[in-house]
Image (tube, rainbow, N blue to C red):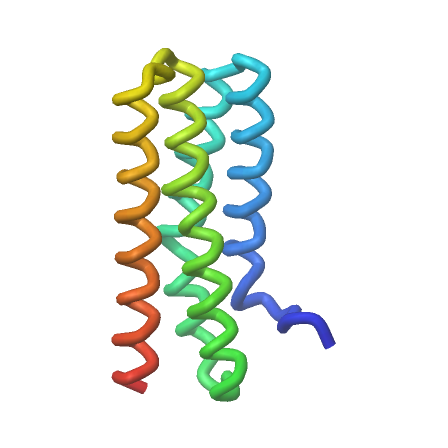
Length: 122
């Protein structure tokens, strides 16, 4: 079995798809569409946790999977996509790239910390 395919993770998958499309838009210099995709990802992310918590009989594996897939998706949506949008918008000098990489790294560390604390809480 690859993953869990129930309604609790659909918004997370939609969010990821929006970010993937946004990355392609940014790379091809359709920055307005890339920003629109980023906003759509944010909208999906705002509600995916509420949808997941609405299912009361989730197994512990489903809960752990949801936490992990949400964090991985958040890294792409709010780490990588904004980094590419900014890079294609003109932050393409050496110091700018360092700032963008540090931004993505901060997001990565924050999400990993959240996952550790959430697992400890459960």
